[in-house]
Length: 90
Image (tube, rainbow, N blue to C red):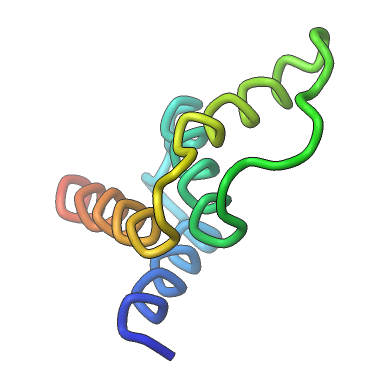
């Protein structure tokens, strides 16, 4: 496993198991979701959710904005975001 992938998996694990003061905003959740999807699946795929599926549309749109970004770049952005939050919040 590459060092980048190991760091990415550690960051994902941190987010999934975070406790205490870690209360991300909806905007941050969307950003992290989109970066995760881009890193693990590549460019957005599938049919865009219907007009009344507001959450589904928000997720799809956030992921779609990252179209063309490499998996490695998305992993690094995810890691950087989590590391920045850890430094800020302890």
